[in-house]
Amino acid sequence: MHEFMIHEGFINLAYLIASVLFIFGLKGLTHPRTAVRGNSLGASGMLLAAVATMLKVGLDYRLIIGGMVVGGLIGAVVALKVRMTGMPQMVALFNGFGGIASALVAGATLLPRLGQYGTGAQDIQELVSVSAAALIGMVTFTGSIVAWGKLEEFKLIPSKAVSLPGQKAVNAIVFLATVAAGAWVVIDPTQALPLWVLAGLAGLMGVLLTIPIGGADMPVVIALLNSYSGLAAAATGFVINNNVLIIAGSLVGASGIILTTIMCKAMNRSLTNVLFGVLGPTADTATADEVYAGKVKSTSPEEVAMLFDGARRVVIVPGYGMAVAQAQHAVREVALQAEKLGAEVEFAIHPVAGRMPGHMNVLLAEADVPYEQLKEMDEINPTMDQVDICLVIGANDVVNPLARTDPKSPIAGMPIIDADKARTVVVVKRSLSPGFAGIPNPLFALDNALMLFGDGKKMMQELVAALKEQQ
Image 1 (tube, one colour):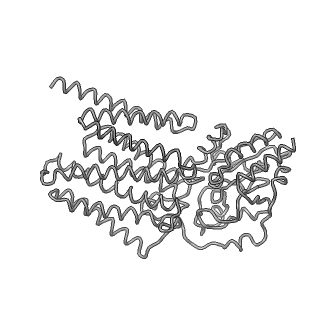
Image 2 (spheres, rainbow, N blue to C red):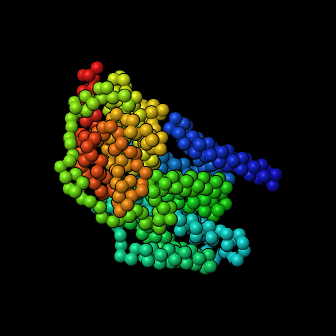
Image 3 (cartoon, rainbow, N blue to C red):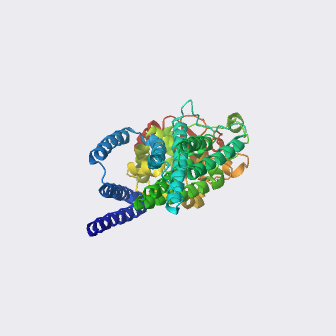
């Protein structure tokens, strides 16, 4: 008994250290400068927790090590091959894998004990936890797969919002049926059918909640699914009586909800609508021909370089197009050349630029852009009317003035970067095609706006060459 207590004490100490590492890891992830260290701390905490759990339970190490090697190799290959533009899809898949893992563990705990549960409080708690883990885990899994498909723009899962006849009524019916199936698992733990019914209905609910959401709102969905995966893990922790899993899942769940709230605020969306898969107005707006109507003025890198001569303040607004073109290094070079001409250069970062929170920050950090030059939307907007040149590269919806002027627009009320208030706006895009919201952008047709059509990386490289000739 004494030896067991010492052993259990060491296990609990390891769990405590792992939990502290998780907390410090999340703290580190709040700033790009400390993000790598934070990620390492979190990974170290998870490794410690996994080793401690194996020591506590006495699992077959050969199977565990084999699984770690196979999973590690798959993860390393995928991480090395994935494009920066594909990171949001990978995050969605990670959320889905976390959800299905929780559901599988819950099922693996329940099925061998069918018929052995009683009416005691401990048994009821375990059954409720199994139901919660299976429900949330399956919703997370199927919802993440749909989100991944939308971001990859598969033909079977279109990126645009898909509304089904009687969508709200169907969602409500499936939700009530899922809750009833969860109660069935708790009431009758003598057979496997209730668990399979619960898993199927929860999986269907995940699809129904995600399919009506368009690509423009995917950042919010990813953050929410991340929270779901944490909640599923916490529920699984109650199932297997693992304290560190409860703590880690709760941290992920809470941080995911906080991030979702921040994203909702940045996009002027209601968290309630997000939870029930109803995002944004759907009213028709003006067509591209009506908005542009021959007002668009194109320019060249040489003409843009002439604008930089004498500019005192330049703001660069990066967007998803920059990520697609992998133009971050060329953009950094443009900033350096503008500084040599005497301009103060800043980068205006919208919270949902790209396809996930922090997407632009990661790309610019990769190009060694100083963190001090990255300015949040609320910090840069009050002084946008003092900007000589606003260079928008690959951004669309996050600089669309319709968010301020058209209450019927799908992005109505969404806070944007006020690029249109700059003295001159230069927009780098391949064409006048719309962004994820699927609406034209009046910014492109303003008197103070110039369009630099072409591949983002190539245009930036040509602009760098033109700027060097002026020195």
